Image (cartoon, rainbow over all chains, first blue to last red; front, side, top):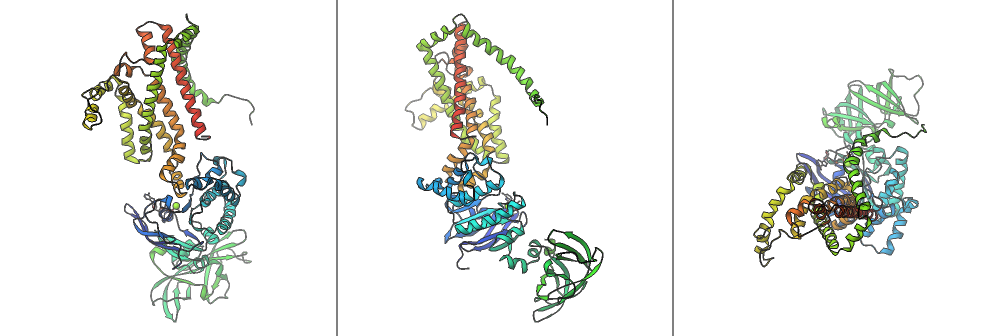
Length: 358
Length: 276
Ligand SMILES: Nc1ncnc2c1ncn2[C@@H]1O[C@H](COP(=O)(O)OP(=O)(O)OP(=O)(O)O)[C@@H](O)[C@H]1O
Ligand SMILES: [Mg+2]
C-alpha cells in the first residue's frame, strides 16, 4: 500500500524470554478505522503502546504521515490514546480534562473554550462541562476520554478496549456513536478489542492477532467469510469443523474423505494431506439442497432469542453448528438429520495441531 | 429500614486511642493553657511576652529555622519520594530501608556524628574549601545553618513517606495520558503529578514544620544557649529558670503557631489542588 498513513514494519518486542510481538507489519490508510482483534495476551496493548511511544520496540519502525516516529517521545507524536480505564485527570473538571491537551500545546487562550465546547457537544457531554470527572458514570467518562483525545486534533487515535467496562446496551450505542464521531472528525483510528462482534460492526478492516503476530488483515466480510487460518475461523464467529484427508484434487476442487462422508471444497492440496473443513453456521441447512451433504446427530439446542443454534456431532470428531430461525418440527436431541451446504461455502485448512489448539 | 440513630459500633474501635490521647495529652495541655491564661499573670503574661523585643527574636528564630528545615526536607524529600514511587521491587525496598533505618539511631548519637562533619576541619568545610567555594575553612557547628542541616537530616523521612504514599496511588496512566495529549515531562509534572501529590506534601510539611518548630534536643546539642527558639525557651523556663508562667506562655504561643501553619497549609492545598 503506497498511500499508507501509518506504516508499522517489523515491530518486535520481547519481555525476558517471552516474545510478545513477533515482527508485526501493519499499514493503515488515512481516516481508516482498523480493529486489532485477538485473545487476551496476544500483544494488542503492546502494539498500541509502541505506536503511541509509551514503550520502545526492540525491532522495527513506525512511520506516521511520512514521519519516522519510532524513537520520538509520546508528547511529540500527535497520537491520541483512549485508555481502557479512561485515565481522566481526577483533580480536573470535565471541561478542564478536555482542555488539558490544548493548554499543554499552548493553543491560543481564546480558541480553547470554543474547542472544548465543540468536542463536549460532539460526545453529548456539554451539560457536564463543570462537573468533577469523579462524579461521572463509566459511559460518561468514556465519552470525556474520547473528547479529550480528539480535541487536540491527533493524526491518529488509538483506543484500547474502550468499551469493555460498559454494559451491552450502552456498549452498542457507544460503538455507533464513536463511528459517527470519528467520521465527522475524519480521524484515523486503531481500535483494540477482543470482542469479535464489536470488530465486525465498527471496522473498515480487521487485523486478527494471535501470539504476537497478525494472522489476517481484511475487511469484516473477508475475515468472516474467508478466514485465512483455522485460528481466524475459530476466533471470529462460531463455526463447524470436520477433520479429514484429501482423496484427490482436480482443477481447484478438492475431494476430502471425512469420517461422515465425502466432501468437496475449493482449494489446492496434495492428495493424502490432513485437512480441516470449516463452515459458517448460517451457511448450513437441515436438508439436502447443497452440494455437500452429511448425516449428523443433534446434540444440543441453544435458544438465543431471534435464532436457535443446533449443535450436531458427526463421526470421527466432527462438530457442526447450524443456525436457524426456529427448531424444525419434530426435532429433538438424539435424532440424526441430513445437513447440507454449498461447495463455495466450504473452507479448507491444513490440519496443524496449532490450529486445533486455538 | 431502621430509623433509630444508633452509634456505629466501629467507632468504639477508636476508644482506646481517644482515652489515651485525652489522658496523656489533652488533660496536661488543658492544664498548661489554663495556667497561661488564668495563672498569676493571666493575659498580662502574653502582653508582657509580646512587648519584649527578645521574644520577637525568639519567635523569628523559631519560624525561620522551622521554615528552612521544612524547605530543605521538601526539596530533598520530594524527588526521593518520586523515585521511590516509580521504583519497583527490590530497589523500592532498599530505598525504604535506607530512609527508615536511620530513624532508629538516636538524635544524640547523630548529633555527635555531625560534629565530625560540621566542625571547622570537618568534611563539609574541607570539601568546600577544596572546591574553592569557600576561601577559608568555616565552622558549621554552632550555627543556624548547621542546625538546619542536622534537623533536616532527622526529619526528612517524615516528608518523604507521606508524599510517597500519595504518589504511589496515582495511576501511572495519568502521566501517559498527559504525554499523549502533548504535555512535556515538565508540564506533566507540574499539572498532573504535583497537584495530585499535594495532600502528601501538606501532610509532610505539617509533620516536619511542627516537629522542627518544637524541636528541643537538636538545637540544644548543635547550637546551645545562644540560639533560642520557643521550644528551647519553654524548656529553659521550666527546667532552669523555674518560670512556669513564661514557660506556659511560650508553649501556648508555639502551639498556636503550629496549629495555624497546619491549618493554613491544608487550606492552601485545597485551593491549589481543587477539590482533592
Ligand atoms: N511490562 C511487561 N513485562 C512483562 N511482560 C509483559 C509486559 N507487558 C505485557 N507483557 C506480556 O506480554 C503479553 C502481551 O501483553 P498485552 O498487554 O500486549 O496483551 P493484550 O493483547 O493487550 O491482552 P489483553 O486483551 O488481556 O489486554 C502478555 O503475555 C503479557 O503478560
Ligand atoms: Mg490489552
